[in-house]
Image (cartoon, rainbow over the protein chains, first blue to last red):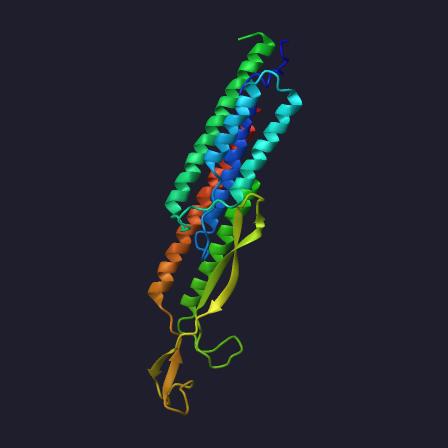
Length: 137
Length: 140
């Protein structure tokens, strides 16, 4: 009955990986906004954080379902990310107006913090795994 | 991360091109002949940017490129210099010399704007580098 979980899957590393991936993708889009800050008629682009977090929540719930097989889980991972991508394409700010450089820089900075936080937690988890494997503190 | 740096670099190149045209406009503010030696007052140049999918990602990030460099078609400034070798010989402007009509205020404000945008892109590259380094530290 006990469901086998690989050491990595029993941690939050797979979820943190998604967060890091999303932060990097979003960073690329935000940097594009900055590069196009003097392009006439350019509309600010962004990836939806809400959509991503919604997908991530669904993903975590599926993951915690005991009977979900490993393959199913991988499937869900991919579909979750794909839907985020689809929703990204058409996302523009609702008022279709340009947003100032300051706001973009702020968003980039916040995104960077999220990214580095996820990586710090991931490092910590790897250290714990290391301790468990070596049976030494 | 590498695409992010490419996009920022495209921004740097675009802003530098803009600064090049501004430098050209200021340097040629008294130029009376064109590159073929014909008597033609210098016309100021202005860059137009456009987004480019060549540098970008499938989820909507785009780079920037210079779409065109447009010549400013505004009237030259006429100065009364009847003994000047390039003075207009006939017509109602007889005795006047046509000088480039360059708005220095506009050029300098444009230059400031371009410099700030350049700095913003440099800052973005620094952040991209930091995020890349952090990612590499996972396995360290």
